[in-house]
Length: 156
Image (cartoon, rainbow, N blue to C red):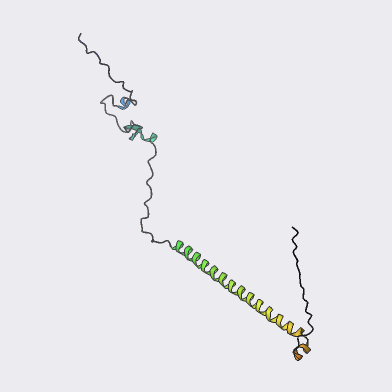
């Protein structure tokens, strides 16, 4: 009649208890032949426990992956080296072609301006009358003198 009185304590949260494995426990000690029952495999369930399962219902085993090739690779990739060399070579070629074209254009500009000056001098010399060159005179020149007179007046 003296039963212990439960003491009030902190509330406990209910813990989920998965389904018991009692249906799988052997109920009798009778001998069961392997041919009477299909092959059984043990697989882990969602809670990490091993449960028996008929082999024909078990999930397929995980396929073993092929072994990896662990041979060391070269430090620098040969294809990347070719790409880099092509980029550097192409840049050098472009720079050289651009510099060469610039040199040709500047030479043509210099030749053009120099030749234009010599052609202008030749035309002027050809157009001058021979008598002015022979006599040493300056030809017919008219001198125009313009004078501007500005007078300021103060009316005040």
